[in-house]
Image (cartoon, rainbow, N blue to C red; front, side, top):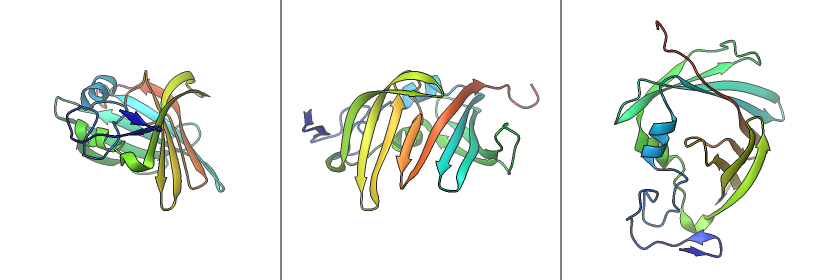
Length: 168
């Protein structure tokens, strides 16, 4: 149920609600797994006072339980600019990144125009002591937000592509 834009739940019985008192996540772990196929590379542009930085997140070796996530800084043209940071995570852990307390989260829908085109998104405004963070999750791209704003910085997905695994 939504009360004044906030979700109210007494117990966890929905695949999108991971903790009592939390708002539903934008996607289930199964939806994220289905979208984040092996080799999916997400290119991000971070805009802050110091300029623009770029990074990639690549999903490798996914199975029913989880996936290896590789993060790397890149330059504007996509050339690696740093070492790969790699971690194995469960699909539920990835879902949990978007699990926010219901009493400080307002969930809505918004159409966002950006590098990936025009996207219908679930918008999450999350109030924290440090200020409000806003996340836009594209309904057609289950996984990480396609844009987020916090503390004067903006990060947005500028490209989604599937690349072959090394050695293939």
